Length: 413
Image 1: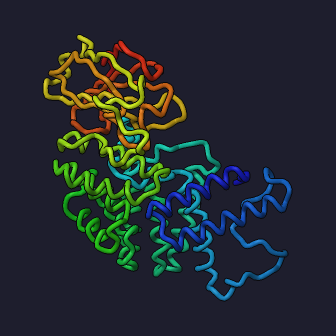
Image 2: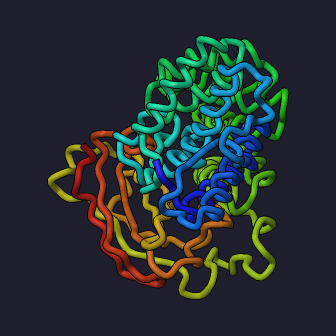
Image 3: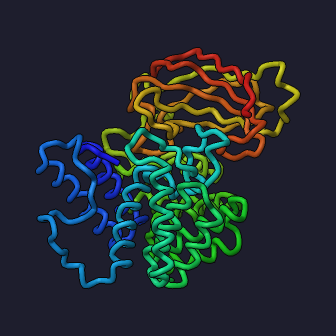
Protein backbone atom coordinates (compact mmCIF):
# COMPACT_ATOMS: atom_id res chain seq x y z
CA UNK A 1 0.00 0.00 0.00
CA UNK A 2 1.45 3.36 -1.00
CA UNK A 3 0.32 6.77 0.07
CA UNK A 4 1.22 10.32 -0.83
CA UNK A 5 1.79 13.25 1.51
CA UNK A 6 -1.63 14.93 0.94
CA UNK A 7 -3.38 11.64 1.77
CA UNK A 8 -1.33 11.23 4.94
CA UNK A 9 -2.07 14.81 5.98
CA UNK A 10 -5.79 14.19 5.50
CA UNK A 11 -5.45 11.13 7.70
CA UNK A 12 -3.76 13.25 10.36
CA UNK A 13 -6.61 15.76 10.23
CA UNK A 14 -9.21 13.00 10.51
CA UNK A 15 -7.28 11.37 13.34
CA UNK A 16 -7.23 14.67 15.24
CA UNK A 17 -10.98 15.09 14.68
CA UNK A 18 -11.66 11.64 16.12
CA UNK A 19 -9.57 12.46 19.18
CA UNK A 20 -11.21 15.85 19.70
CA UNK A 21 -14.62 14.20 19.40
CA UNK A 22 -13.73 12.00 22.35
CA UNK A 23 -13.95 8.83 20.27
CA UNK A 24 -10.25 7.97 20.03
CA UNK A 25 -8.41 7.53 23.36
CA UNK A 26 -5.30 9.66 23.89
CA UNK A 27 -2.92 6.70 23.83
CA UNK A 28 -4.15 5.46 20.44
CA UNK A 29 -4.22 9.00 19.08
CA UNK A 30 -0.63 9.75 20.05
CA UNK A 31 0.73 6.44 18.75
CA UNK A 32 -1.11 6.70 15.44
CA UNK A 33 -0.21 10.36 15.08
CA UNK A 34 3.48 9.58 15.52
CA UNK A 35 3.22 6.74 13.01
CA UNK A 36 1.62 8.99 10.37
CA UNK A 37 4.09 11.80 11.01
CA UNK A 38 6.98 9.37 10.55
CA UNK A 39 5.53 8.24 7.25
CA UNK A 40 5.34 11.84 6.07
CA UNK A 41 8.96 12.42 7.14
CA UNK A 42 10.03 9.27 5.30
CA UNK A 43 8.35 10.48 2.11
CA UNK A 44 9.84 13.95 2.38
CA UNK A 45 13.33 12.62 3.03
CA UNK A 46 13.09 10.09 0.21
CA UNK A 47 12.31 12.77 -2.35
CA UNK A 48 9.96 10.34 -4.07
CA UNK A 49 6.72 10.58 -2.19
CA UNK A 50 4.73 8.67 -4.74
CA UNK A 51 7.10 5.70 -4.55
CA UNK A 52 8.01 5.70 -0.87
CA UNK A 53 6.80 2.71 1.12
CA UNK A 54 4.54 3.21 4.07
CA UNK A 55 6.38 2.13 7.21
CA UNK A 56 5.25 2.29 10.79
CA UNK A 57 8.81 1.86 12.02
CA UNK A 58 10.86 4.73 13.31
CA UNK A 59 13.29 6.12 10.72
CA UNK A 60 16.81 4.92 11.21
CA UNK A 61 19.73 3.19 9.63
CA UNK A 62 19.32 -0.43 8.49
CA UNK A 63 19.89 -2.75 11.39
CA UNK A 64 19.20 -0.10 14.06
CA UNK A 65 17.30 -1.65 16.94
CA UNK A 66 14.45 0.54 18.24
CA UNK A 67 14.22 1.48 21.89
CA UNK A 68 11.11 -0.71 22.15
CA UNK A 69 13.22 -3.82 21.54
CA UNK A 70 12.93 -4.69 25.22
CA UNK A 71 9.18 -5.17 24.69
CA UNK A 72 8.11 -8.69 23.68
CA UNK A 73 7.95 -9.15 19.90
CA UNK A 74 4.24 -10.04 19.90
CA UNK A 75 3.37 -6.91 21.84
CA UNK A 76 5.43 -4.68 19.54
CA UNK A 77 3.85 -6.25 16.46
CA UNK A 78 0.39 -5.79 17.97
CA UNK A 79 1.06 -2.10 18.61
CA UNK A 80 2.22 -1.61 15.02
CA UNK A 81 -0.95 -3.27 13.75
CA UNK A 82 -3.08 -1.18 16.12
CA UNK A 83 -1.45 2.01 14.87
CA UNK A 84 -1.97 1.00 11.25
CA UNK A 85 -5.55 -0.07 11.84
CA UNK A 86 -6.36 3.15 13.67
CA UNK A 87 -5.27 5.18 10.65
CA UNK A 88 -7.07 2.80 8.28
CA UNK A 89 -10.32 2.89 10.23
CA UNK A 90 -10.15 6.68 10.35
CA UNK A 91 -9.86 6.77 6.57
CA UNK A 92 -12.63 4.23 6.01
CA UNK A 93 -15.13 5.67 8.43
CA UNK A 94 -13.93 9.13 9.46
CA UNK A 95 -16.18 10.47 12.24
CA UNK A 96 -19.58 9.45 10.98
CA UNK A 97 -19.05 5.80 11.84
CA UNK A 98 -19.32 6.34 15.57
CA UNK A 99 -22.74 7.95 15.74
CA UNK A 100 -25.84 5.78 15.73
CA UNK A 101 -28.93 7.52 14.42
CA UNK A 102 -27.07 10.24 12.53
CA UNK A 103 -29.30 12.80 10.83
CA UNK A 104 -27.28 12.10 7.69
CA UNK A 105 -29.41 8.98 7.34
CA UNK A 106 -31.97 11.26 5.73
CA UNK A 107 -29.86 10.90 2.59
CA UNK A 108 -28.59 7.37 3.07
CA UNK A 109 -29.97 4.33 1.33
CA UNK A 110 -31.36 1.41 3.32
CA UNK A 111 -28.28 -0.59 2.35
CA UNK A 112 -26.11 1.99 4.10
CA UNK A 113 -27.84 1.38 7.40
CA UNK A 114 -26.22 -1.92 8.23
CA UNK A 115 -24.11 -0.74 11.12
CA UNK A 116 -23.99 1.87 13.74
CA UNK A 117 -22.25 4.01 11.74
CA UNK A 118 -22.26 4.96 8.84
CA UNK A 119 -24.07 4.59 10.63
CA UNK A 120 -22.68 2.41 8.15
CA UNK A 121 -19.39 3.90 6.82
CA UNK A 122 -21.08 6.00 4.19
CA UNK A 123 -17.96 8.12 3.84
CA UNK A 124 -16.54 5.65 1.33
CA UNK A 125 -14.24 8.13 -0.32
CA UNK A 126 -11.44 7.12 -2.67
CA UNK A 127 -8.66 6.94 -0.05
CA UNK A 128 -5.72 4.61 -0.31
CA UNK A 129 -6.92 2.22 2.39
CA UNK A 130 -9.46 -0.34 1.16
CA UNK A 131 -11.83 -2.64 2.99
CA UNK A 132 -9.61 -5.54 1.93
CA UNK A 133 -6.56 -3.93 3.51
CA UNK A 134 -8.43 -3.24 6.74
CA UNK A 135 -9.64 -6.84 6.76
CA UNK A 136 -6.11 -8.08 6.25
CA UNK A 137 -4.73 -6.01 9.10
CA UNK A 138 -7.64 -7.00 11.33
CA UNK A 139 -6.94 -10.70 10.72
CA UNK A 140 -3.28 -10.18 11.59
CA UNK A 141 -4.21 -8.34 14.77
CA UNK A 142 -6.71 -11.07 15.71
CA UNK A 143 -3.92 -13.62 15.36
CA UNK A 144 -1.57 -11.51 17.48
CA UNK A 145 -4.22 -11.13 20.18
CA UNK A 146 -3.94 -14.88 20.84
CA UNK A 147 -0.46 -14.14 22.19
CA UNK A 148 -1.46 -10.91 23.98
CA UNK A 149 -4.97 -11.59 25.33
CA UNK A 150 -4.57 -8.98 28.08
CA UNK A 151 -4.12 -6.11 25.60
CA UNK A 152 -7.30 -4.05 26.02
CA UNK A 153 -6.21 -1.54 23.40
CA UNK A 154 -5.75 -4.32 20.87
CA UNK A 155 -9.21 -5.78 21.51
CA UNK A 156 -10.78 -2.31 21.24
CA UNK A 157 -9.11 -1.57 17.92
CA UNK A 158 -10.01 -5.02 16.61
CA UNK A 159 -13.63 -4.43 17.58
CA UNK A 160 -13.75 -1.06 15.81
CA UNK A 161 -12.16 -2.58 12.72
CA UNK A 162 -14.71 -5.39 12.63
CA UNK A 163 -17.50 -2.83 12.92
CA UNK A 164 -16.18 -0.89 9.94
CA UNK A 165 -16.12 -4.15 8.02
CA UNK A 166 -19.72 -4.90 9.01
CA UNK A 167 -18.69 -7.96 11.02
CA UNK A 168 -20.80 -7.06 14.03
CA UNK A 169 -20.93 -10.39 15.92
CA UNK A 170 -17.11 -10.51 15.93
CA UNK A 171 -16.96 -6.85 16.91
CA UNK A 172 -19.19 -7.48 19.91
CA UNK A 173 -17.00 -10.36 21.12
CA UNK A 174 -13.91 -8.16 20.87
CA UNK A 175 -15.64 -5.28 22.67
CA UNK A 176 -16.63 -7.62 25.50
CA UNK A 177 -13.01 -8.67 25.97
CA UNK A 178 -11.82 -5.05 25.88
CA UNK A 179 -14.42 -3.87 28.40
CA UNK A 180 -13.52 -6.64 30.85
CA UNK A 181 -9.94 -5.41 30.76
CA UNK A 182 -10.64 -1.68 30.75
CA UNK A 183 -13.98 -0.86 32.34
CA UNK A 184 -12.92 2.71 33.15
CA UNK A 185 -12.59 3.86 29.52
CA UNK A 186 -15.60 6.05 28.63
CA UNK A 187 -15.10 6.03 24.82
CA UNK A 188 -14.75 2.24 24.90
CA UNK A 189 -17.93 1.80 26.95
CA UNK A 190 -19.82 4.04 24.54
CA UNK A 191 -18.60 1.99 21.58
CA UNK A 192 -19.60 -1.20 23.37
CA UNK A 193 -23.09 0.21 23.97
CA UNK A 194 -23.35 1.05 20.29
CA UNK A 195 -22.34 -2.49 19.32
CA UNK A 196 -24.91 -3.96 21.72
CA UNK A 197 -27.56 -1.73 20.15
CA UNK A 198 -26.75 -3.11 16.71
CA UNK A 199 -27.20 -6.64 18.06
CA UNK A 200 -30.57 -5.54 19.47
CA UNK A 201 -31.82 -4.31 16.12
CA UNK A 202 -30.49 -0.76 16.64
CA UNK A 203 -32.36 -0.52 19.94
CA UNK A 204 -30.56 1.18 22.82
CA UNK A 205 -33.11 0.25 25.49
CA UNK A 206 -31.86 -2.02 28.27
CA UNK A 207 -28.28 -3.30 28.29
CA UNK A 208 -26.91 -0.74 25.79
CA UNK A 209 -28.16 2.18 27.90
CA UNK A 210 -26.55 0.62 30.97
CA UNK A 211 -23.18 1.10 29.30
CA UNK A 212 -24.07 4.53 27.92
CA UNK A 213 -24.85 5.65 31.46
CA UNK A 214 -21.63 4.06 32.74
CA UNK A 215 -19.67 6.00 30.13
CA UNK A 216 -21.38 9.27 31.12
CA UNK A 217 -20.64 8.59 34.78
CA UNK A 218 -16.95 8.31 33.90
CA UNK A 219 -17.01 11.29 31.53
CA UNK A 220 -20.17 13.44 31.48
CA UNK A 221 -18.90 15.16 28.35
CA UNK A 222 -18.11 12.10 26.26
CA UNK A 223 -19.54 13.00 22.84
CA UNK A 224 -20.57 9.55 21.72
CA UNK A 225 -22.24 8.65 25.01
CA UNK A 226 -24.13 11.96 24.92
CA UNK A 227 -25.14 11.33 21.31
CA UNK A 228 -26.41 7.84 22.11
CA UNK A 229 -28.26 9.04 25.19
CA UNK A 230 -29.91 11.68 23.02
CA UNK A 231 -30.88 9.06 20.46
CA UNK A 232 -32.54 6.90 23.12
CA UNK A 233 -34.38 9.92 24.54
CA UNK A 234 -35.58 10.86 21.06
CA UNK A 235 -36.76 7.32 20.35
CA UNK A 236 -38.77 7.30 23.58
CA UNK A 237 -40.25 10.73 22.69
CA UNK A 238 -38.41 12.49 25.53
CA UNK A 239 -37.51 15.34 23.21
CA UNK A 240 -36.42 17.74 25.94
CA UNK A 241 -33.78 15.26 27.11
CA UNK A 242 -32.72 14.56 23.53
CA UNK A 243 -32.13 18.26 22.99
CA UNK A 244 -30.26 18.53 26.30
CA UNK A 245 -27.89 15.68 25.43
CA UNK A 246 -27.30 16.71 21.83
CA UNK A 247 -26.75 20.36 22.72
CA UNK A 248 -23.90 19.28 24.97
CA UNK A 249 -22.23 17.49 22.07
CA UNK A 250 -22.41 20.69 20.04
CA UNK A 251 -21.30 22.84 22.97
CA UNK A 252 -18.24 20.80 23.92
CA UNK A 253 -17.23 19.67 20.44
CA UNK A 254 -15.28 21.50 17.78
CA UNK A 255 -17.60 23.57 15.53
CA UNK A 256 -15.61 22.37 12.50
CA UNK A 257 -16.04 18.70 13.37
CA UNK A 258 -18.18 16.70 10.97
CA UNK A 259 -19.15 14.50 13.91
CA UNK A 260 -20.51 17.52 15.77
CA UNK A 261 -22.35 18.69 12.67
CA UNK A 262 -24.02 15.29 12.33
CA UNK A 263 -25.18 15.32 15.94
CA UNK A 264 -26.33 18.92 15.62
CA UNK A 265 -28.50 17.86 12.73
CA UNK A 266 -30.77 15.86 15.03
CA UNK A 267 -31.56 18.95 17.08
CA UNK A 268 -33.92 20.46 14.52
CA UNK A 269 -36.43 17.62 14.62
CA UNK A 270 -36.12 17.17 18.39
CA UNK A 271 -36.75 20.88 18.95
CA UNK A 272 -39.68 20.88 16.57
CA UNK A 273 -41.32 17.85 18.14
CA UNK A 274 -40.60 19.19 21.62
CA UNK A 275 -42.15 22.55 20.84
CA UNK A 276 -38.83 24.38 21.07
CA UNK A 277 -37.29 26.90 18.65
CA UNK A 278 -35.49 25.31 15.71
CA UNK A 279 -32.30 27.23 16.44
CA UNK A 280 -31.73 29.26 19.57
CA UNK A 281 -30.72 32.82 18.74
CA UNK A 282 -28.04 32.71 21.41
CA UNK A 283 -26.24 30.07 19.34
CA UNK A 284 -25.97 32.30 16.29
CA UNK A 285 -23.28 34.94 15.74
CA UNK A 286 -24.60 38.40 16.54
CA UNK A 287 -24.43 39.47 12.91
CA UNK A 288 -26.37 36.42 11.73
CA UNK A 289 -29.38 36.26 14.02
CA UNK A 290 -32.42 35.41 11.96
CA UNK A 291 -34.61 38.27 10.93
CA UNK A 292 -38.23 38.57 12.07
CA UNK A 293 -40.44 35.93 10.51
CA UNK A 294 -37.73 33.28 10.73
CA UNK A 295 -35.85 34.26 7.58
CA UNK A 296 -32.09 34.61 7.48
CA UNK A 297 -30.38 36.70 4.85
CA UNK A 298 -32.66 38.11 2.14
CA UNK A 299 -33.30 35.48 -0.52
CA UNK A 300 -31.76 32.67 1.54
CA UNK A 301 -34.67 30.29 1.11
CA UNK A 302 -36.29 27.90 -1.33
CA UNK A 303 -40.02 27.34 -1.58
CA UNK A 304 -42.53 25.36 -3.54
CA UNK A 305 -45.14 22.63 -3.35
CA UNK A 306 -44.98 18.92 -2.57
CA UNK A 307 -47.43 16.51 -4.23
CA UNK A 308 -47.88 12.74 -4.21
CA UNK A 309 -48.17 10.93 -7.52
CA UNK A 310 -51.67 9.42 -7.90
CA UNK A 311 -50.17 6.02 -8.68
CA UNK A 312 -48.63 5.93 -5.19
CA UNK A 313 -51.56 7.29 -3.23
CA UNK A 314 -52.71 3.85 -2.09
CA UNK A 315 -49.25 3.12 -0.68
CA UNK A 316 -49.39 5.96 1.85
CA UNK A 317 -51.48 6.32 4.98
CA UNK A 318 -52.81 9.73 6.08
CA UNK A 319 -50.73 9.62 9.29
CA UNK A 320 -47.44 8.76 7.57
CA UNK A 321 -44.67 11.29 8.11
CA UNK A 322 -43.44 13.46 5.24
CA UNK A 323 -39.93 14.95 5.44
CA UNK A 324 -39.02 17.88 3.19
CA UNK A 325 -35.38 18.88 3.36
CA UNK A 326 -32.64 20.68 1.46
CA UNK A 327 -28.99 19.73 1.25
CA UNK A 328 -26.06 21.38 -0.49
CA UNK A 329 -25.87 20.57 -4.20
CA UNK A 330 -22.09 20.92 -4.22
CA UNK A 331 -19.25 19.96 -1.93
CA UNK A 332 -20.44 16.49 -0.95
CA UNK A 333 -22.04 17.56 2.32
CA UNK A 334 -24.85 15.13 3.11
CA UNK A 335 -26.31 16.74 6.22
CA UNK A 336 -29.60 18.54 5.55
CA UNK A 337 -29.37 22.31 5.81
CA UNK A 338 -33.08 22.78 6.50
CA UNK A 339 -35.96 20.42 7.17
CA UNK A 340 -39.70 20.39 7.71
CA UNK A 341 -41.90 17.54 8.95
CA UNK A 342 -45.50 17.13 7.84
CA UNK A 343 -47.98 14.28 7.26
CA UNK A 344 -49.45 12.65 4.18
CA UNK A 345 -52.88 14.04 5.05
CA UNK A 346 -51.42 17.54 4.51
CA UNK A 347 -50.57 16.80 0.86
CA UNK A 348 -50.41 18.68 -1.36
CA UNK A 349 -48.76 21.39 0.73
CA UNK A 350 -46.54 24.42 0.27
CA UNK A 351 -43.16 24.67 1.97
CA UNK A 352 -40.45 27.23 2.64
CA UNK A 353 -37.01 26.09 3.74
CA UNK A 354 -34.81 28.78 5.26
CA UNK A 355 -32.52 29.35 8.21
CA UNK A 356 -35.38 29.11 10.67
CA UNK A 357 -35.63 25.40 9.83
CA UNK A 358 -31.88 24.81 9.79
CA UNK A 359 -30.30 21.72 11.27
CA UNK A 360 -27.46 23.58 12.95
CA UNK A 361 -26.01 27.10 13.18
CA UNK A 362 -22.93 25.65 11.50
CA UNK A 363 -24.87 24.35 8.48
CA UNK A 364 -27.51 26.71 7.13
CA UNK A 365 -29.11 27.23 3.76
CA UNK A 366 -27.87 30.84 3.62
CA UNK A 367 -24.33 29.49 3.54
CA UNK A 368 -24.61 27.79 0.15
CA UNK A 369 -25.45 28.86 -3.39
CA UNK A 370 -27.46 25.87 -4.58
CA UNK A 371 -29.39 23.00 -3.03
CA UNK A 372 -31.26 19.81 -3.84
CA UNK A 373 -34.70 19.62 -2.26
CA UNK A 374 -36.11 16.20 -1.41
CA UNK A 375 -39.41 14.97 -0.04
CA UNK A 376 -39.97 11.53 1.43
CA UNK A 377 -42.90 9.70 2.94
CA UNK A 378 -41.47 7.77 5.89
CA UNK A 379 -43.49 4.69 6.77
CA UNK A 380 -41.59 4.31 10.04
CA UNK A 381 -41.64 7.99 10.97
CA UNK A 382 -37.86 7.88 11.35
CA UNK A 383 -35.20 9.84 9.49
CA UNK A 384 -33.48 6.76 8.08
CA UNK A 385 -34.91 5.63 4.72
CA UNK A 386 -36.39 2.14 4.70
CA UNK A 387 -37.71 -0.04 1.87
CA UNK A 388 -41.25 0.99 1.01
CA UNK A 389 -40.75 4.70 1.70
CA UNK A 390 -41.87 7.02 -1.09
CA UNK A 391 -39.57 9.74 -2.36
CA UNK A 392 -38.97 12.51 -4.87
CA UNK A 393 -36.43 15.27 -5.33
CA UNK A 394 -35.56 18.32 -7.39
CA UNK A 395 -32.60 18.94 -9.61
CA UNK A 396 -30.00 21.34 -8.17
CA UNK A 397 -31.59 24.80 -7.80
CA UNK A 398 -30.24 28.16 -6.72
CA UNK A 399 -30.99 29.34 -3.20
CA UNK A 400 -33.76 31.91 -3.58
CA UNK A 401 -35.73 29.73 -5.98
CA UNK A 402 -39.51 29.83 -5.62
CA UNK A 403 -42.28 27.79 -7.17
CA UNK A 404 -40.50 24.43 -6.97
CA UNK A 405 -42.69 21.42 -7.72
CA UNK A 406 -41.57 18.28 -5.87
CA UNK A 407 -43.53 15.18 -6.82
CA UNK A 408 -43.16 12.08 -4.67
CA UNK A 409 -43.18 9.41 -7.33
CA UNK A 410 -40.52 6.81 -6.53
CA UNK A 411 -40.35 3.95 -4.05
CA UNK A 412 -37.29 3.23 -1.92
CA UNK A 413 -36.11 -0.28 -2.74
